[in-house]
Length: 153
Image (tube, rainbow, N blue to C red; front, side, top):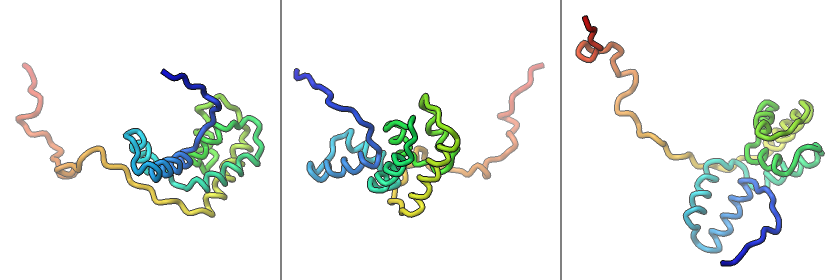
């Protein structure tokens, strides 16, 4: 069995992955099972093109926030938070301390770029549950006497 050596490791945003899967699909005419599932997921959640993500990434790098690593920037690109509270909640998953001013700068930068760009059309995920047969409003609120719990004497 061959042994593989990892030459480098770098985080990839969901928009870049979606673009790369499109290239693979064009080359091979079809994706394998995992590729199809990944593409389906990305169609639900990627709202902007890879070019927009590249603009946001470049702008975040220009802010020169010293503690912001590439994996943090990639997570921000995947979720694109536009308020300081959203930025803070995205970065809570990491052992990272960023000042309120820098969090506000990140949110403002993302918001300014997204205001100029148009989102791509996303697919709505399928419903996980079928439509109910009866509406909740049609269900009687009183419990019928035969199904009420019987009191013991």
